[in-house]
Length: 367
Image 1 (cartoon, rainbow, N blue to C red):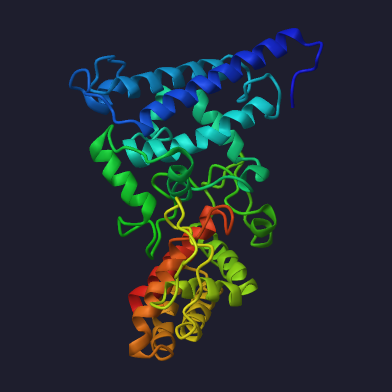
Image 2: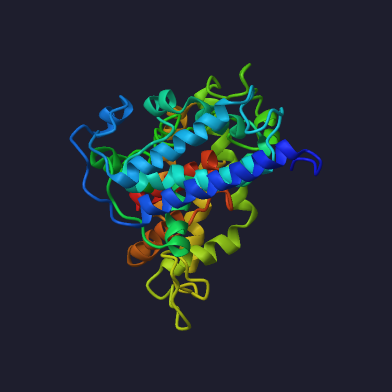
């Protein structure tokens, strides 16, 4: 993972790359956690992509992108995708990726800068190859977060992010990340996510994919997998996880009832954290009943997305008949409480987690 002690050249390169990582981190903090200054000249995103230094972006944005270009140069200097000429990532790759992952989410959400867009892939091809290579590693899936989880856990660690950058894109990306665009957390889900690509590597643990008969493409991606089979497999994984801990999940969700989420002991910097909250005991049986229907929906075995949506229509009466009218608001708020706290990868990989969020929204819509 680290250069050998007698590898003076390798150790010197590690030190230089470690300093570059700190420089990139510093520019990221300047860009995200401080108000941006005025843009230099008109031009916007397309001007920046065209190489115009006076392209309508702030000094902090320019500094961040220039530093990212240094990272691009280092990655381009090796024959493979990694910082060293190995066939596998080393320690410095992991040092970088833990913060670059946060940069991808925060830059899209607060600045409208999508470093994985087709346009940015042309500007930073080695960076995107490096990210794609990480995503082909199953172990990366075990600690890779999604953008929503990041933008909720970044402020308690670093402070609030400031909106700025490319405003049109920022509004679109932020709504997609938080499910407020009416698409990214709603059925029918698009096959891929428009901001955070799902299939550049295994979207689920390999055992789940293999058991469903889903094989990788020749390049190690899953971008050509059958969309219906992939959606079914992702749904089923979410249903399996929900069923495996259903009682505790119901208790957790019932904090969203009007008598729940009381926290008399202390407040937290994390917007969604309330670890000492109690469940609404009056709402709990109905929350549990609604989650059993959601679990049934996720665990269904229809082969196509169209058939699955028809199956959900048949479940609507089963859902509404179990929830008295005077408890519907409590159940709706509890399902939303759970939806907003689905953590990636803590609870599920994103490909399955978004299915859980969308099916919770389906139940909310029915109620």
